[in-house]
Length: 254
Ligand code: G
Ligand code: G
Ligand code: MN
Ligand code: NA
Image (tube, rainbow, N blue to C red; front, side):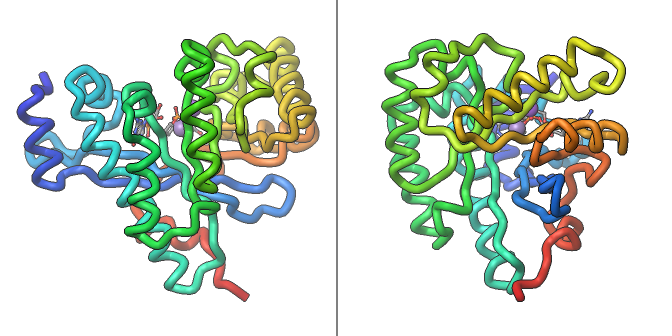
């Protein structure tokens, strides 16, 4: 049982760590970004995956200080890679519903960018369909301010929620991420193939980038590439790894 007090202490004691998973341009093989994924390195229990503590963090409101730490650490790491002379990539950070709707998200993002000296164009925030479809006008208001800062916005787990296409085109988005549920049996399930084709076509018609999640096999990779999906992420390329291990995916700036 994970208790609120234990999580609170964990955040204070700096027990959270970020792992990074590369996002690959399927046509060039270049890394276009890194997704930051939080883990809790608990002194007794070891590495706890986010699915085991994010829900508690959301319920208790601890997601707010936690999310701020994640954003700062991710931006700082991306800036560090740049100053080390690697070709710049986009860092992508997951934003939870509670964080998204909290009044000062935009100011918090602006402050973190200034503090870490990261160019906003190298930050992408991932939000989910349900977060933006529940209250469309509020979502557009927040997204427009984030976009005005120069940060990119992605819809995570796309296809699992209910998206109104009429609303979708009003959002200042850069990227759609195809949920890995559709990628899993893509090469054997005609319905999943049809869904992936539809999402790729939708993304392109709205002038958005599209990235497939959960690519585990060469077959899935080739299949997606042949259907025009330009970016991908998954265990085939790398599982999420600590910053010092993922560095091998970055290329020196020419
Ligand atoms: O890394 P992993 O596959 O275990 O992540 C599981 C889930 O936790 C994913 O849905 C991911 O979006 C979410 N997650 C990972 N890191 C963060 C984070 O920093 N903030 C939020 N809100 N969710 C995260
Ligand atoms: O919901 P979100 O897209 O943020 O979730 C990202 C999660 O997906 C991470 O926790 C990561 O560990 C997981 N993940 C990344 N690549 C793969 C993959 O190829 N297969 C599976 N099963 N999970 C993956
Ligand atoms: Mn994500
Ligand atoms: Na996802």
